[in-house]
Image 1: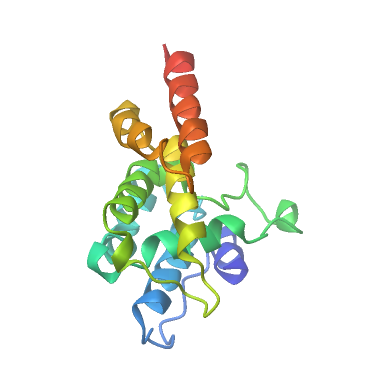
Image 2: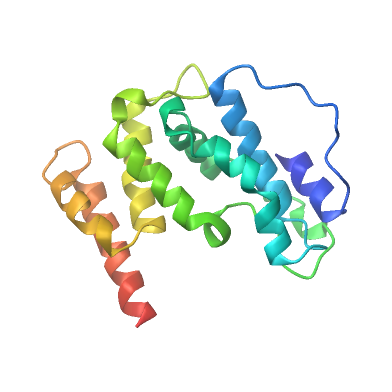
Length: 179
């Protein structure tokens, strides 16, 4: 992913010859890397960057693959910060997709919570409980007030109840600060 960020900031095209992903999780992680590439192509307009992300987004929104939430969690956890301040550009390096694709990220989190049995991870040690916790927190971060009833229902569950309550508080805080 770091290479994608560097190529983007240097306005270099992605290599045409790249190994094709074999598993859905590889495809999803590759799509996230491509999204980071395009949102960091600061030589392009915001609209051109968003349009260039459509193919990668279509991969991530294939909900029946069940890998987008787990790979988004991995992207969110990875550290990409060291040395990025030395890359060219007049705007900060985007290492998360929040400001560009929060609606799509919320949709991924919703689907994960609606169909936890479909979820799988990128790494062999992935943990469904952690992915579910991430999806609950993700609704607080990416979602909107329509997610509050879903989160309230989850608040009664021992495994994710406190996460759901924190997510509701985040949504309400965001809503209050927007008004």
